[in-house]
Amino acid sequence: MDSRTMSLDEAFDKFCRGVSTSGPFWDHVLGYWKESLKRPESAFFIKFEEMKEEPALHLRRLAEFLGCDGILRLCSFDNLSNLVVNKSGKLPPGIDTSAFFRKGEVGDWMNYLATEMVKKIDSITQEKLHGSGLKF
Picture 1 (cartoon, rainbow, N blue to C red):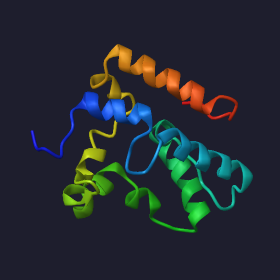
Picture 2 (picture 1 turned 135 degrees about the vertical axis):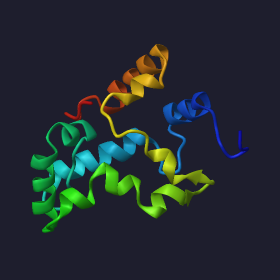
Picture 3 (picture 1 turned 90 degrees about the vertical axis):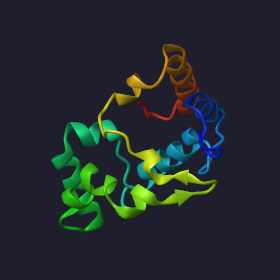
Picture 4 (picture 1 turned 135 degrees about the horizontal axis):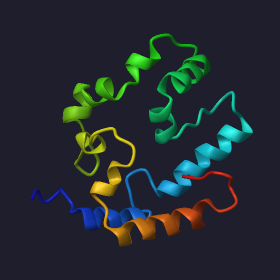
């Protein structure tokens, strides 16, 4: 294992503690959620599960928000996961950008996380998002 690559257990622990390159996940998501409610003309919020369930509907909404055509093709999992930057790019501290792409399937996390991990993340998520109206 590369010295810059961490195990799932280590990555899980850091995620739960809010230690990541972009800061605590829940603070990040909740900030965007609140902004999308306060200023929907300036912040577009969508969940992965919603996008997978009805991609054409939500991409039409996104295209309208952005004023763009061809957004469905540009934002498709196949297109994004095959971009050179997402196949070979790196983020500090040496994280391969390819680590952000697995299969693009809703619920695939179940194949990676143990039951106790799921319970812990669910508990933290409920605590962090409590009262916001945002639910995963």
